Length: 99
Length: 533
Image: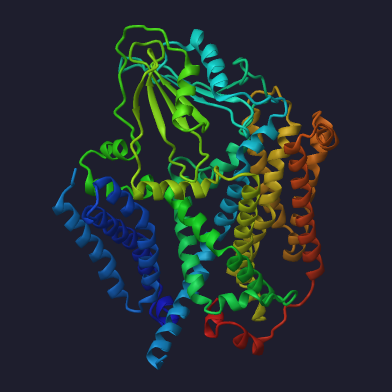
């Protein structure tokens, strides 16, 4: 597990670099998009929903970032975080602002 | 528990141990500095008062202080865009005012230079002549801006806070026996002791660490995570208006009108708050027909998002009040309040201060553990190990000397010297980084002893300098019952003693060969997770 993460066993350092960048930026993107979607969909007034989304965003980010180092398959991490960020942000964009 | 579940749990602990190590290491030094200076910031007004020993005022009522300040501002600053008046309370000595002139209507005109802050006598309203200093504000600003240009310091602090949050979560998952480990503190056992000390400081104050890290992120959430606002609002300002009652900036009408007396307005606000003390008075367009007076409540409540009421500046009648807060806005306000602890009385504030120190201790022992673990393997020290060891010395042992030097510089630099506030700040960084640079020239074990000893001595010198260079030394303060100055001197001596104890301990460890006790390890900690640490 740890060997897979660190790329020990001749797989080179680019994998850990890609994993770190995905966790840092992909994780932020996915957490921001998820928080935005929660804010957009929560059935309370927009101000309250917005603040709930912002309040929980860091918990989303931490969870996604840690998961990026737990899941052994890098492609799965990359697809979930980058793809999730794009998908959720797309949904938020299509829904448009409430107020 | 089935084998598959056990295996999943084992794999989870393993990966969490790995990420915990690297998150902690990469952000550890900055986090240590953020925790130490942030902890000092619990006493921000007290530090400022200590750093301006000339300022000494008997307490006055809020309306009296507001009246005195406005009486001073009226002749000189009428026609400004805004006066922002921080009223004194029982922790701050003087009234502080920021005035802002009306911007030049000519768009090509250069923006007016920011006027310096005014410090006023709370009872008389006259300017106070005190030594120029950043005071407690310096540690407070440093702990989230890291003395870097805006906005990079805040982004770096936020990144480190995210690392801290993730390290707390992964740390808890790693140590499945975390609470059992809490009761095993083995002194003088090398790596075991650092691990035990790390666990004790972490478990002891785990709720505090998690709270202070998360709420710290919340203080700058509008900068770090503004996206939910965009998801709901076409115009982001609508959010601020609805959440905090900040309306669009009102414009002056251009007709001059006398400002209504301020004292009855402050008293009216206090009546609405059942006697709670207002903290700030914001007067917009003083002297204009559209002048407004906004009174904001002090942070005497857990919720730091203070209520405010706006009155007409010409008639004194109530115009608007901040909207009632919903559950989410209240939650965020309480998180803000928990982080800043302005609601806390002296006893609770000292508790928060001590818990903050356990945070610094947890980070420091974690950093020690990293090197102790790798030193134990008996191999010659590799470059990364040496680098970490040196950075540990630079952060853990040298920063305290820098903080004490900031206090010392305040007493040593002549009180009338121009630019002395900046010199005080420079003194902190010169001593901190200078001592860290010096420590590079010394062997590691000696460097620990010497830098800790220098830090201890610098702290011990502060009460001496205070006694020699002001008339508010320890004995004089004791006689006059000036508990702020007495406590400050005592705190300096206690910190000096703690650092001296650490230096003595490091001295005793000098030359002791690292021991390898491999057999005991796996039975004592959470199995294989410990090996990954």
